[in-house]
Image (cartoon, rainbow, N blue to C red):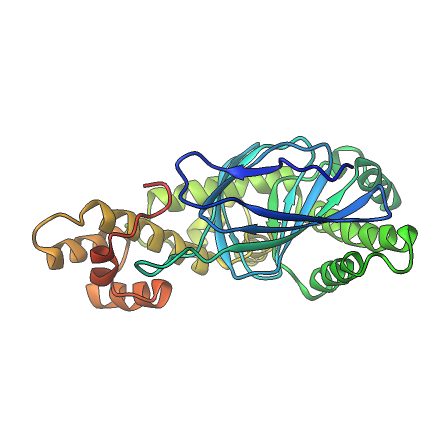
Length: 307
């Protein structure tokens, strides 16, 4: 794998400046580390011939991605892992809400570039079939083991692989095996489709009550299994995810109505349209999510992603 990288580029219309990327030298031809700093809210990830596993070493953010599995939304919390398979193109819209007049909170990722050969050898070591070794674009919540493996590999590559290429590749293999096992255990293809249906249903029913039992039935899973799989695949509980989608919808509605007369009534309407039973409950949740009241946010002229 060469050190040249055009895998990230600024999306058209984005207000960010250049993406900063540092590729560290590695004695291994199978594992490299790129430290990536994305100042703005949107970027395109172009296809590369190697697997990328990005370890989120910055603040939490949300990815609204368009890729091989269609359009999906992934909460990407600190220490979670973003998996980008070889030859995959995706568009990410990322960035925490910003107060008026201030810059977006940058996304900071430690991206492990892993060769096809190491991916294949990891899958064979686990006894997986070829189809089970085809990773999907996804975010994996960072459990204690994943965090330890990713942090250990990051420290080793940053230190220049002091124990040699073979030791570094062993550490990378352990991380890849864990990611493969997680995906194989969850059942990637069927689960991705089920969760995509649930996500689409949530986005069309944000104005209405969304019972977990209803969502689990839509996914064809038991309530316990649904909640576990949802958190493992999307990095958030169903409740957290629904709240985040309601907040994003609220921002879009507030922005679109910023010039309307009667802002108070407008905010009540937004609260109802986003599934909140009262404007006071909506205002409290909105301030917790953005750091501003709905009226403050609306007056700031903030433009939500995708608007």
